[in-house]
Image (tube, rainbow, N blue to C red; front, side, top):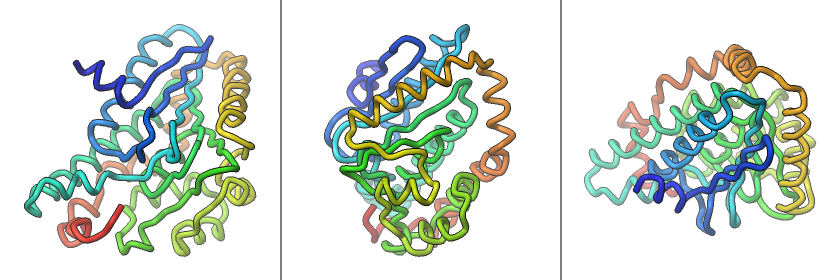
Length: 256
């Protein structure tokens, strides 16, 4: 039954030495516990099927959205504020666990941003080693400033690690800029921009095959990445925005 739920939310295709994980459907791919669990289960399958040969992972999504962030509607649907807080804490805990999995993953990872990636969805994309994005649809957007919701410190730690330019970090965090693929590439936030979703996937496959061709030891690769992102791994142990009730209860009144 768990495998059926996983298939409903994402698919996993093995193409040679590449694994392509696709978030399925035309919804916003909100990061609720069910979707996060489905992604984590797929990652577990990749680990088990790739233990002896060099591989690479590509994650993409169907529809207009790569991911539109946390599923705040699901959190608020529980009723009392205390239950909402519990659900916010659960989503945060599961996303931080997924981020740990990706940083510890024993192969190169490539995000194909096939549509909008907002808030926690933007963070999910940034967790990958490489980010490729289509030009014809979608923005990268840290929406928290526009909706009056505090960005968690661990989000900021990842932004500092992944976005090198102080001016680019300012635009993402302090201007809530909606960045097209072309603008994001110019700012060094993504690796490349492509004409369509199909072209973006093709470019990701070419990149993945090139990386696999280097025949790196996946466990050594993961160890290097963990050292590179040690600050993020330390920061994801805690999320003050869901542990502090004064921050968390804001989610009762704002959109995603």
